[in-house]
Length: 256
Image 1 (tube, rainbow, N blue to C red):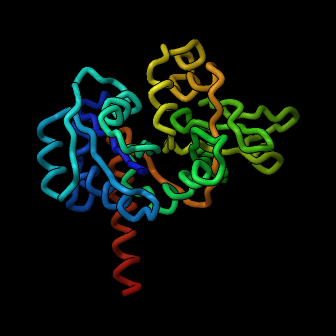
Image 2: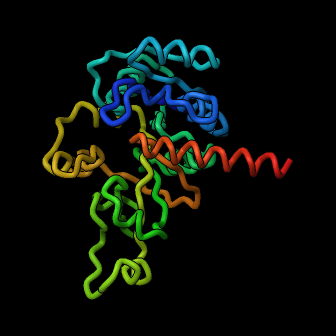
């Protein structure tokens, strides 16, 4: 069984009540859920919540919802808590609840390596950076990977460093940079192993939990996707998401 779990924490530091934030008349968590439902490989989807208000809203649009303890601070720990009670689950997909425009095809692309290569136990997504703003942004993690597409490092800084390049535009023209899209696919045992480990030095420095996996020798397969997504972390991001959705509705209406 391949189970998608969407962690939804109400008490976000930068955007309180984020899962219920309205985007075009729907709460953000509903957008994420409906997009995830378009995956062809997921057998089931569960929303993991920490607040009764989110629980009720998720139930109202027909989602399967599980209440988790409020003191769980990370999405990975939240999905691990849920997955421990899913005996038939073999593969767990961590679908971020603040990705209202995630594509079902993106989810399937991330799952596929675990289906076709027994060596792969964790996978994630990356997309080529084409905008200088993305390269400069510390809120967009970057990833470098080897010739077999296994992650070497993740950073909030632009990596790799391009010696000799005088401008960011020149950097992008000389080297392929990739942004990390925070969707993870785990073999269930590998997820439980990861969440049992203590936070590591590089993880603390960069505030990127995927570095904990690398520091402990866990290998992460990176799937390069042509699809893009948008993560909502701040009130400004929420306004941008609303504008993106308006444009989507206009285009949809035009093509009908």
